[in-house]
Image (tube, rainbow, N blue to C red; front, side, top):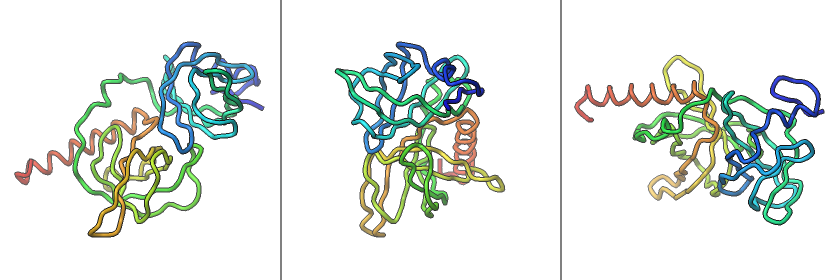
Amino acid sequence: MFKTLFGGKPSGASSALPAKGASIEVVVAGRMAQTVHVDTPGPRSFITDGVLGKSGESAVVIFTTAAGKFRFATRINGVKGSTTMFDMPRRIDRVGAKVAEHRRATVRLDAIVPGRWRFAPSGKGMGEFNKANIRDISRGGCSLIADRELRSGTLVEIQIVLKNGQTEITFLGEVVRSQGIPTSGRYSHGIRFHGVSAQEDRAIIDFINRKQTELRSRGLA
């Protein structure tokens, strides 16, 4: 049975989706994120413009409406002409209140903190978390330093503690680049965050401001 944001009958699932013509972000497993437009928002299939992948491939859809920012996992069930058809989502998660797009543009802070990561092939983490170092944190992403190399387009969950004494925050991210670190044998990966909530965004801002204040007090910024 399909669920809406607030529960209910299957026919209500399409009412929770963005309207026809709305701009959305789609991340198909193993591929770079793409911004496309809704062609048909249900009730049998969720259809977008563009050829985004092959039938059977999993995907994550992120979109914003007047009610806030949302995310759901789905699967491609067909490609027709220049459109892609997806299964209707069984669950749609709110990931934050609606916020202005300009908030994403901030300085990337070169600070290293401990963190963890794991694979998230369909937008949801699977398996055990692996230890890692996190650096260059910004509102849009970070650098993940791990013991193994991850391919571009890989979806991962990143856990970071942004303030001492608080629990870690889990971000959904996509690997956009990677390179080896000859001196350590490890790998540095550029990560782009997806679906950052308003609370998570504020936590990143507070972290950056706090670290910049510390650097200035030491005469390093």
